[in-house]
Image (cartoon, rainbow, N blue to C red; front, side):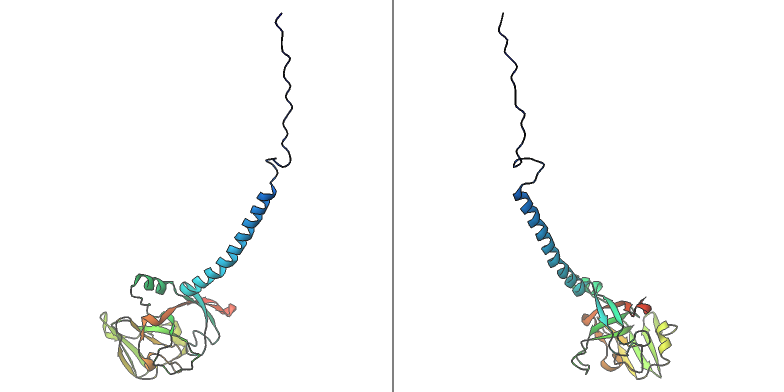
Length: 220
């Protein structure tokens, strides 16, 4: 008879705790902790940088200082100023011109005598490039190619509820990359009647909304 060999016995293999795939090693735990810490630190760094970018180029809160835009805006009102269109024009090198009746924030004109604390002004756009703006006998008239006989830009506008006339005298032709601006409080506003037209280069952005006081929030 041919000898038969006994079946070989194999001891089952049980991974040691050090090599068990189901149990993370000390090294992997440290790496996970470091990744968690680095993610948190990165978020803490990125958040303020993002906030700075947004306020510098997209939108920024401003506080109204003074009464020149009453009754549309009141002293200490807080606004959101939308800056993105101006930012895009700066990047692309294109001209930026706001729309008529926009409320804009702009750097204080150099020829305006005002306290050093006055860094910006807020006014309403009335005249656009190429137009002639005349202030006379208490009213405003804008002349352009579509209205050679002139029109009153204040007619039937909600903001005119705060005044009945526009004092002063002016006869100004708005140049390229310029706008003519007026405050809604026509009897108490230093505007283009005083310092002339402003360059669109000094415009910061358009006031798009009032968010304080909360009970008077509205889109502008």
